[in-house]
Image (cartoon, helix red, strand yellow):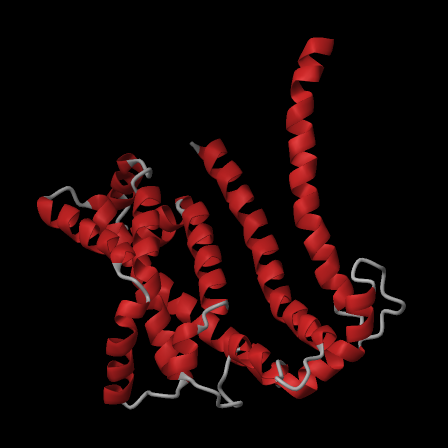
Length: 276
């Protein structure tokens, strides 16, 4: 028993060392949100002398984070809704099809992983100008799902292929249509995949910067959080406490969504295992 325990010692040391590598920067990041520049540079790892929300208040005022967070939420939620609206039926059709056309279509979606972001930047700019949606959040809501479709369709297709065909046959015998089969059989069983797609795309949509910079621009009424944060950086002197506080505020929605979806993903996996 002692030999077995000693054999696990290096693994425990590596695990705790890796945890320290993650926790120390996180502590420094959170502590800096309550400090001024002098305290950040003189004693970076010391506890803040007070927990005053002054930096957070100034971040809201100077960076216009209220509107920025609302714009990011609008673009992200709208993009996720369009992504699921398109990806679920497409994945459902591909999972149930066995012909060559379905395989070619699935490979076409997989080729989307090979398209670099910069390659589509100029055509996207021309499309936004041609449709009259340049400098609007509406175009971002329509654009982001296009970038998420390859991952969403490929991932959901693999989950839907695990659905036993007997369940669909039983539903058909009860008079269920195609939409009912998707809603009541495939979607519930594929909930872990749907949660994974929502989580991954939420992170990508919320943190998207390049296309937002080109399409939306610096308009304070429409810019997202990723465009508002750089406005707090000044060449004459940056208040890093305010900048850190603003970054913390923009990360809070990400943490909340990740926590909620992680729990739902685990519960969905357990429920699916019990049913199977």
